[in-house]
Image (cartoon, rainbow, N blue to C red; front, side, top):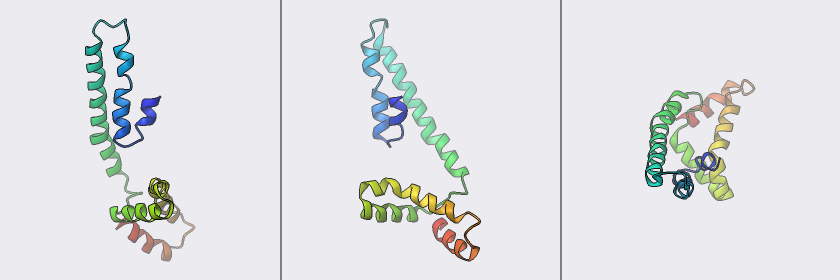
Length: 123
């Protein structure tokens, strides 16, 4: 469960989640070769992390054309909300901009307002 939750923290969470089972494996007296088991477990986790981060997530992001946003808009949102709310604003900036875009995509917003805003958000 801890490894699953830590996987949402970029880079650092993956390293901590990778090292999390090490003491359990090394101090388990039932294993004949704990170092080999640790090597296999670590290699499997690294392989899965590589496949998911470089293949699966890339394909999922490429396929989602509905929530496509220009990278400069994301950087501006991170800077703006970071200036306003500090690190908490930086974490909340991308979900807030995505929520804004989802609200713009609804039928409640007239197209004369929606289309220019979407052009800016999508680049």
